[in-house]
Length: 622
Image (tube, rainbow, N blue to C red; front, side, top):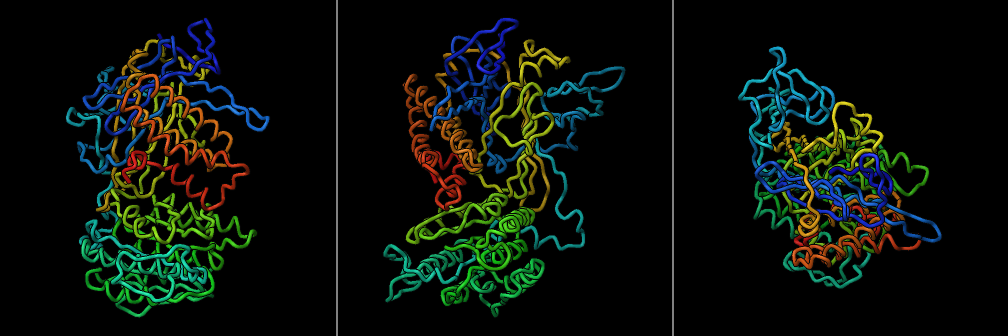
């Protein structure tokens, strides 16, 4: 029996039944991605099982209606859609069946022919009736070309196909040969004394008789990090760029420092060209051969008056981009950019600066460079304005006390990149649509969601919500009857550049069967996936400025997951809920603040990090 939900009603055939209670849900893991199911109390609903021999996956057909909550005499309400699935992009670290030909797309909806697709013979022609949209596609496919697995890899372009004259060897470096560029703020504010007494773990690096400044703290940590890298990754290219009144390109420390003067800090092309030229001659040595020279120059850097943050990030990305895919820029700063490109100290430059940091993010994404930013507590840096650089490149933002710098470098930025230029497309059946996603990311009547990720690592997890289309839209679909369907298709298309330069696509497909079993759904609910989604989605709402909506959604999720954990008395669910509760309290505390200032560094960093929270963080593993 299939139910359609419209507003606060479930419509069955011609009769209408009102509902007033929340729905229950269930989660299964498909190995590569997981799907959470929704089921209403006292009513039958979809329970979807994976038809492939991995882990199971369930999918619902109902969307929960959350009672409105009153805030400051206004009524806010938010539908909590427990139709959720999670995709772990870390699946790219595992191998998959390699396709023998090119992918075959549906002419109508861009679904890709897969293991579950069926070819029929019509008048001696091969016809694929697309399982996503029922469009009939003429195909010409040999038996050996039919995918045998639910997970297929396609090589779209071999390395350097358009650059045959390039020497292949230098560009096919291993992960150990990536470039790391430390981009260090030496503005006057870095002279401030660290507000806690700092005792460096590696006291042999540098001992001072005077109190330690912010700059002393950062220099000591970077020096220790370089020493450790020289032992663990001897072939890695490591260098430094400092910024204050000007940009100083230290490189690997073996040659003279190159400078980009104050008057050139507004010239985008000059900075790029100068930096690329410096990369070729100043980043020629592996860290094992030059670490002592590099450390010496870093610890000798003295402070200057201004903060040329924007030009320095541009320079660092340009340098790192000359290295292997997966190279990194690590920015350490404590102040607001106030000179050169991307200056944030003048309101009239707001739009221009926003466009600049967006452009920087796109450049990093194109070059396969991850940009990570560490800001020091005590002074705001307008994190919100520079976030696009980090977000588009797949990096992290950390806001830390100087005394905790060492742990942040080691724990946060020491993760290997699996792929660059990652673009994720998720394909739904035409009876479904995505929910709570911005329109610019949706296409094909909201059945395709497209997201760019820049670089990804094995801890990159993403959640999405979906629902049935409106009853009106379903009735207008003349080519199928939803009540007669026994299964629905889902597909993930991951476009990426491998570290050897190959442009590839991984396609993960699933056909899911429909049934209903209320007790089983509740008993086996995966609170981890639902909790992960709740934190990601509510944080995204708050980042967009919808604080009240975020607060209502987060609280509704909390109440829902707490009830499930208590009702079932399942130890695994209780543990998952407790993990969720710890994360929830942090983000909900931000949502509850009166007159919350989204652009403060503390709030910006919390919301950014939680909008990208992954399972390892959810489980407190990192």
